[in-house]
Image 1 (cartoon, rainbow, N blue to C red):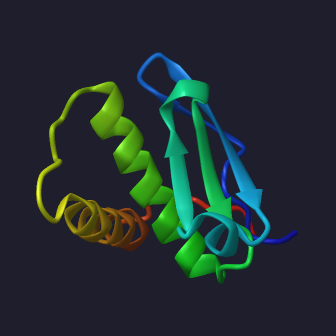
Image 2: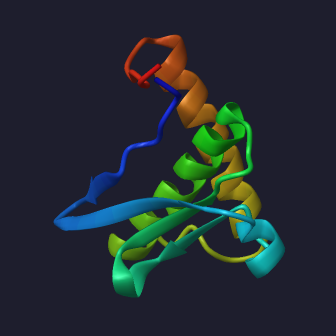
Amino acid sequence: MMNQLPKKVSVGPFEYTVTEVERLAEKHGSLGEHIPFSSEILIDSGLDWQSKKQVFFHEVLHALEERFKLEIGGEGADDKIDRMATVLLQFLQDNNLIQWEK
């Protein structure tokens, strides 16, 4: 079985659908998207596995920020979220707190 992101995740009381989209970066100019109105997270399907995981956590952090009014925004907000996603993913993997299907 191939590595897979979860198909659904809960962000507080909201259930998000996670979908891999072909050529998302080419079509929308981003590797991932968080769409709060439809509770969706989109990830470019052409990414390698490590990049998919990092982009997934990046978009989950956007979902958390939006739903819980964390106000991470401001200048450089996307860079802050990107760094947070990277270190969160590394922390969870290094401490065996996350299991990915293989």
